[in-house]
Image (cartoon, rainbow over all chains, first blue to last red; front, side, top):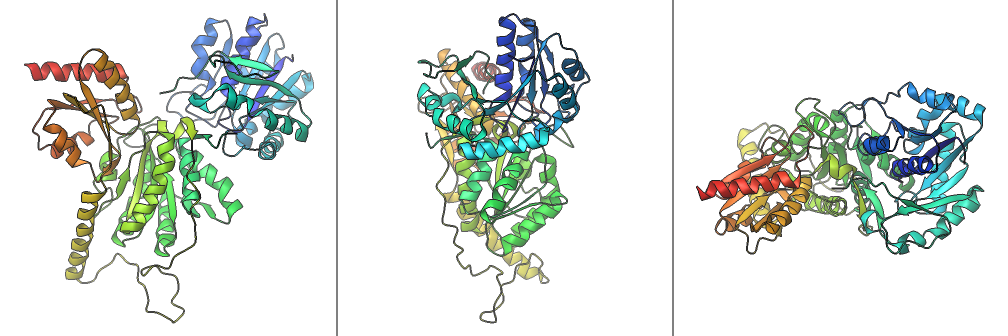
Length: 216
Length: 355
């Protein structure tokens, strides 16, 4: 485990969901944990939605000052610097979707690279229309890396069909994730799925998600 | 893997439009519909189509006017303030009897308003919006699957009746993600149309696309003809969904995201022993007047549930000739009502009727 974990990926791949669950996972393992929502792309569903739940667990949440209001202003709070500079807690960064979202990382990259204790995990959902195959996902990964000025270090397979997901849908994407691993030379760090799935998917690297976004 | 994909409503419209043979998209970014334009920007260059981010909404709608005149499938998309800017162009397209698709993923207004979901452009979409006597075919999707299916339908209807069609969605349906089965790719081969401006090659008389008439008698005649066509559409194309109406004593009328909240309210009210049903207009123009008129002969009252200060409620009252009480449950400015608020509205309607 590294001190800084960044979640990047195609927008709608589930980065925010993974980020809040990962922060909770770190905290429950006994680490000081903080989550920064630096998604400057999507003003609707975001990890700041889970702020109250995370703070109850003692996890610090840094969100855009105008998250969930009518102000569509992509300004990052200065506390994010504190998170990458101060090295006493584990930091989870929820980065915005695609290359455009990853651009916001730029100013923090020198600090992260200098400390050199990070993981940048590419979140993939092979049921998303523009990342149906390993090749397509790799293309998005490269665009994100170019925009961020950093290389990914691992893959998270978060393939799901929303409310219609069963174990079978998750298991069926193992090959695509493996292929992306081969193409990129990166390991699949874990396969995430809704903890309420019953039966749970049979995968060798499970990461059940206990916090879920609200859906109307 | 499944042939289902997990999509945002905005993306589903974009992919469905491509599969319906649309190869020309003109737009200008605005939250909460930007994913639609972003998707088009990624896909169109790969399939030999046109994606163009115009200098403004006004420019974009006039580019749509141009392509529509050639008989090709073309679309634009925006959100409330941007759709207001497009109104002049929409009136010209309607006045020139051309098909196209306009998508409005509504946000709270008036003015610059906010970026959260709303349904307060109902009047603008169904009663004209721009100047002159004209209508748009207006479809109201309430799920991501319907965003895809209705895109295809909107192109077909627009072409069939040679008029613009609008998909009137809201920020929630645009942004939410659901599993979708995408429609099959349609054969995009171009068929010659007897009105499209495609170059005469000196082999046929000119086709003229125009909304200017120098002789008032001619302009009047054009309006008469257009409204004969509208009358036929009102007769044959009204679509709606009926939910638990068989034994209903009260009828909720709601579309889009408000209809989803209302479905939950119907179930909750029935658990309390109040027999409620839902009529969900799928076409907002033509409005399903007959379905409401028929319902008014059975139910004791109506509840219009809207994300506006009460716009569709006027059409509900007109449809039933004000024969039964019609009450409103509404939120505005980007807020969404809870099923509990709708159930409270049903209780109030019931008590009021008992007096």
